[in-house]
Structures are given as structure tokens and as C-alpha cells.
Length: 197
Ligand code: VGL
Ligand code: ZN
Image (cartoon, rainbow, N blue to C red; front, side, top):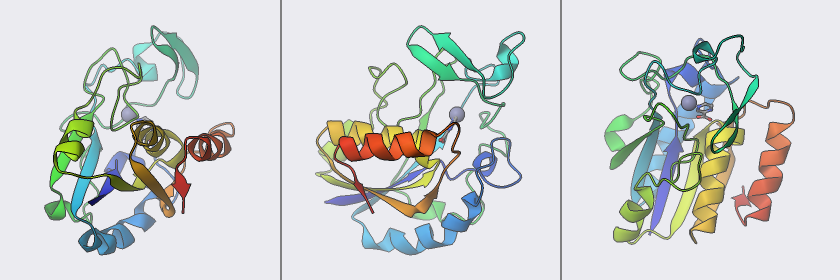
């Protein structure tokens, strides 16, 4: 069984949003067109409390895109984005949300960020997605969405480590590309056995 995993196609990651990814809106229509070809469709939704620890606004004298050290390792500080219940956290208006079997939210604990759809950034706290997929008999995943070098990358590498056969459709992803993060992500995904279509 083969699932389509649509990562964070939300207003804040699209042009005009708080953490806009260039061309983020271009992938919406082709993702919709792809949904019918899968046994299951899962959407992820970045879903932060307003005082989330990944927001630069929560740290004195820190600006967005600076790094800090968290108990679980280095963390990029982001502009406030995908605040629970805000328009920015909503899915892109054209995304065919009605086709989703499951919507999984992540990043809702103040003290820890969660790029991956499977584990929070401590690489230990599960989101529950693995259990959902396995109990539905799903063993293959195709991933699309935003952003290639953060949430798609972390999700794809975790899924491959968990034993899923993973394809990332790079044509249906867009990247933030911070200090070479896209190239590093592509190398990391390849090393983990992800098929970069
Ligand atoms: C993401 C940065 C912060 C993503 C989410 O969806 O790639 N990036 N939160
Ligand atoms: Zn986030």
C-alpha cells in the first residue's frame, strides 16, 4: 500500500506568508492532481503555540534565522509562523483537504520543534504517524510539500530509517535553502536511501 504524504502546504509557507518559501503555491494544483493515485493521503500541519520556543521573538536579542542551542541540539530560530488557529496555519485555500484520510499536526509543544512528521526534533518523541501507517498496511510513501530542506527532509529521512520505501518528488517541493541547507538535505536523503525523483 502506497501513501501520499503532503507536508505543510500552509499559508505561512506560501508567498505572502510569515515564512514564505519561493514558489510554494506552485505545487498545490499538481499535488491535488496526484492524490487520486494513492491508497491513502496524509496531510501534515505545522501547528505552534504563539510562544513556541522556535520563534526568534521568544529569545532576547535573537533575530530570525539565527541559531540557538536547545536541550536536543542546535535549532534555527524562525519568524513567528503557523500559530494554532491563525490564517497562516491554515492549509492553502486551493489544497484539496477533503481528500485527506488523516491530518497530523506537529510542533504543538512549546519547548520542542518538530520538523519531521514522525518524530519531534529530539528524534525520540513520536507523533504517532508510524503506527497509523503500519496499521493500515502502508509500506511505500511518496512525499511532497514544504519545505524540501526542513520538514520534507526530516520526514523522508525518518521514514527511510523506519523501513518505509520513500520517494521525494522534488518537483512538487520547494526549499528555504538557508546556508546550503538544500544541498545538505539532498545528500542526507540520498544517504538514507530516499529516492529523489
Ligand atoms: C518548517 C521551518 C519551521 C517546514 C516548519 O515546514 O519546513 N520549516 N517550521
Ligand atoms: Zn514550524
